[in-house]
Every structure is written in structure tokens, then in C-alpha cells.
View (cartoon, rainbow, N blue to C red):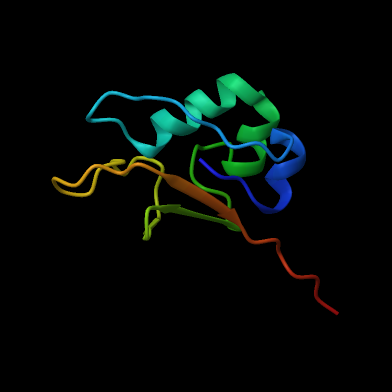
Length: 93
């Protein structure tokens, strides 16, 4: 898992590597990352209700994830890498 944007200060710019069971969801992966880096990471990525924050774009391979409850696997093909890309909100004027 690669972190960009305003998550890098929480993760120290390091990648997160873990193994999960075959039927794991994106939320399972995020829960493991939060257990490793702390609750501040959850605050940056998820709303209080558990949805992705509006300024977070999360990709599994090349597939954009719209909900943390989506599976990590897409069909029969295993995913080896998850990239989290955070787009900062732009300031209005």
C-alpha cells in the first residue's frame, strides 16, 4: 500500500505491506494499516460513518475503489499492490 498526499506525515512516507485472507475487503486492509500507523490515519481516510473522505481517491491496481467494502480481488485475478492516492481539496477564493 502506497500513501500520498496528506497521509504521508502519518505514515512517515513508508509503504505498508501485509498479507490478508483471500476474501478480504479494502476496509480489512485499511483496518490493518490503521492498527499499524494509528487512528490518525483513519481520520485522514474515512468519515465518522466509515465512508471514504471526499478528498480520498483509492485505487486497487488500476481500479478505483468507491467504497471501503469493495473486495481487494477483482474476479479471479489477485491484486498484489494497492495504491492510496489522496487528492487535497482546493481552496476557493
